[in-house]
Length: 232
Image: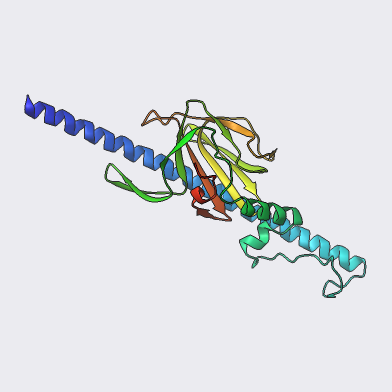
């Protein structure tokens, strides 16, 4: 009987480890898709900025204005293939202002759910002996909890990733990503306001817990979201 109990426990532990590996693979793939979506948006922003700079330069030349003249305050900002990601994403006054406002709200952004508990932090962690790296934080909340934008911005990506959705919102140079969502109530290209509903949280398949993964990116680099949110 003791041997049978030990064998059953070993099988259960093996099943848990296998399920955890599957979950970590799903999370890793979703993170890769979020990263790819943000990279695509950065490259698209670069293309738009380069085209706008060329058009402005052509218009100035047609009007007989020399962009090199330091007295010309309306000279177009030059964006090229060598421009940094920050320069590209802040190419317009509106984008630069939004970036500045988002940065100024660091430490006071609302949580993406009204009721939630942080259950997994940013960075490297271990579960069931499996080492993983988190590009964001995991927040345990209520079933079907409303997911809300933490700041005003533009919806740039919505994807169905392995049965649940993620949404990416751009705030100038910064992006926020919300994943493990059951439903989505916004569309790509839509402008959203602070605390606007984006959808609802899904139940995590392995743990049976409603959890939202929340990420903050500066350009193409994930940063620790906890330093951006209002302390609980």
